[in-house]
Length: 279
Ligand SMILES: [Zn+2]
Image 1 (cartoon, rainbow, N blue to C red):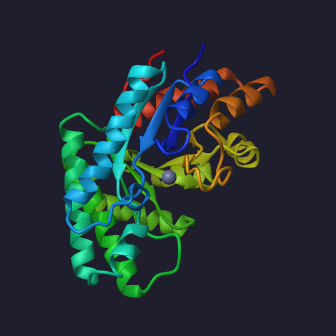
Image 2: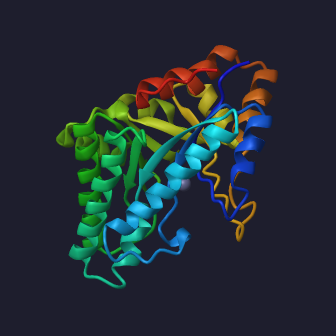
């Protein structure tokens, strides 16, 4: 038996809920980084920072349920999706919206400091926005990096599709925030392992066969994720909860050394997040 970790998954009690974690477990999965869903998905209309708190508490509760009811270990990652800024600017001016999100990140980091979560998530839009919104998103991302640096925790980043140039820019931003580059995990990375390695940021690769084929041909300095969203209204829109364990086994069968997957599923997450991946 070996550890098998999904670095970015969502679970929704309106979707498969705990059954998704059970499916992951039956396929051979052992650890999940459970990322908070948007306030919108809980039907929360944000008016104060405490509204983010409800979404975070919900995520922590689901992680507790997984830890109690299944053999899978779930680590909560709390954050605010860049699209929340876009949505807030429909009701608030940009500055107010930005402040609300920064206060929300303050709450997320408090949960980390209290030991209820292990990392935060922040980032900037993957879609076209105004210059002012792009600027505000970068300020939020920088603020999140600073919080993580102070708390000594990792950050998952949601960003646009990066290039070597934008990776270098993000890496510089981390330096300014005092955050070590290897405490940054780029969620939904494309397989460009040497480019990530050269700036120190950690890629989390979508567990599709094609992406893994390329990534594995470049080395093993990456993690794997499904970004499973467990949305009952959009079944099949992303990879299912069994994908990371299934792909891992498929590639071992194809001749990839098991040590490669021990690095991917245990060594890297342990080092980046400071958690224990035990089986
Ligand atoms: Zn996600």
